[in-house]
Length: 176
Length: 164
Picture 1 (cartoon, chains in turn orange, cyan):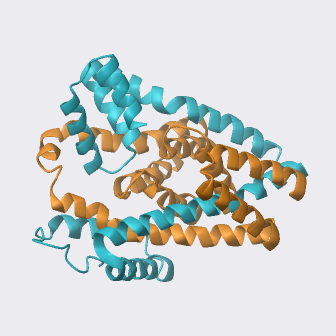
Picture 2 (picture 1 turned 90 degrees about the vertical axis):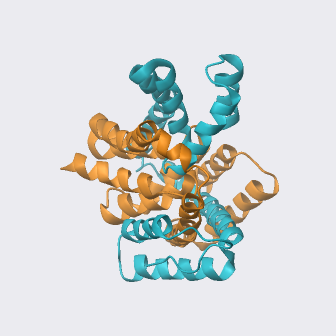
């Protein structure tokens, strides 16, 4: 049962997550935190922080870790399988069909029309992380860390790994 | 990551021609799911069948999954220690900023393709359906995808609407 749920929780986001790689993040949050309640918003934020600091695609890292947390090695296998295999099989199986339609305006439209919805869900996540921050670290620390992170990421183009590391250090010293 | 794969596959090993690589990339982009697993999966399959496919995909994803499990596993185990707890709280605002950056990026791309009005109206309707009425996002996005695919191709600008 848990394996079937894990499969669905990662299969659905990965089959509808058009519009770019990170599109799956709010969709996975909706399943893992919202629908199944396998982890808290705080834990999900920690996964995202580490996931953004490490190389390789975020989708498979999240699937591997969440699957393992929920149901051990078998869970990790199921979640990663649901992430990777369906779209890969489609690609191998329908190559000719996809090749003919690779520049079709309808196919382009699919990403274009899904993007505003994903943007909305991402904005919703921003609000929920803000609430999480206020409840945990408090308003002042949340604004201070958030503003520093924004300046580092946007203004100085610091690698996310260093920003995450900085926040971990700050948290250990100031919030511990 | 794509330029690095290109470097290895086309330049170094000569498994594919330049043009083939571009076609595969275009095809992979018509499908959902991470591009960084579809490309290696397909190329691995072409070179070495099912074993090649599995090999290529695992090489991309496995190392960092193991790192995630080890690091977060250790972290969760000592969550009760106060400074580790503080570390967890410290990264939440960073993730908030990263998510805001992504949200802006998606909205910006959406505005370039659809314009402000359509983007915001679609976002508002979808937000109402998902967060107010509690409809699963899969249904909302699924309906949009089907509409986008089935509606006749527009001549000039993308048609209005699309949200169910």
